[in-house]
Length: 84
Image (cartoon, rainbow, N blue to C red):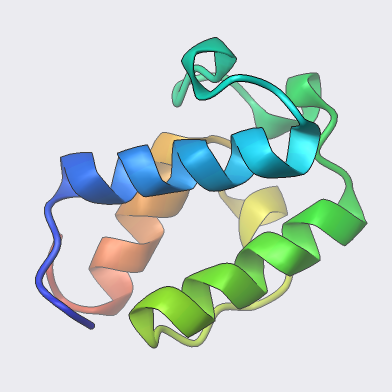
């Protein structure tokens, strides 16, 4: 995984979630559950693939269900790379 800060990772995740739910990134709160924005299983599968592609981190398709906020997903990704 390229060197990335928690802030940069969180910002990237906000952008991706905003893309999937067709909202402005400013409307996405990284501390709120993704389901309130309409993230469903199809979107979370896509998000898992995006994470794998962008950061080279193998991610289970249930990552968003097991880590229901952007902050939790960021922690998971950083932890998986030993960069927590």
